[in-house]
Image (cartoon, rainbow, N blue to C red; front, side, top):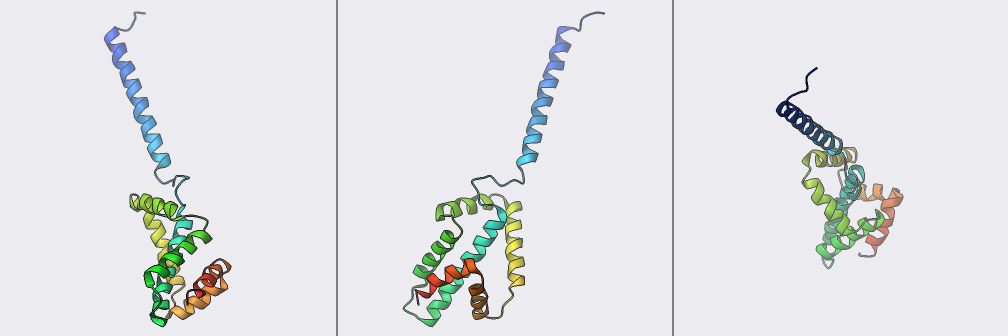
Length: 151
């Protein structure tokens, strides 16, 4: 048997190298596409935190309606900080995760779908009913105890 010419062997080696490179890139891109990195808040927890942040901001507005001397901005910052504390995170972690999800709309849509589902499940005509329901939840009741101190 005769040996393969050098130029054909070189082309074959290049084809094999590039094929392996593209295969490796394909496998890496597929495996990490829908995974949230460890340093980013996972989707369900992010949805829970966002729900509590929205509730805190709504509560701050409602407290201001009851007592105009209560600053909406200051109360919202305080209540939001309390949400972070309850969930065991800080503002920087939340902001980093929020920014990451903004760059991944496919995964952020899952978070928003979860928020929408939560809103539909909790479809309450008044904030007072939501407030009463929150008092029953032990995690949220800690949050509300601190909010009462603002009134």
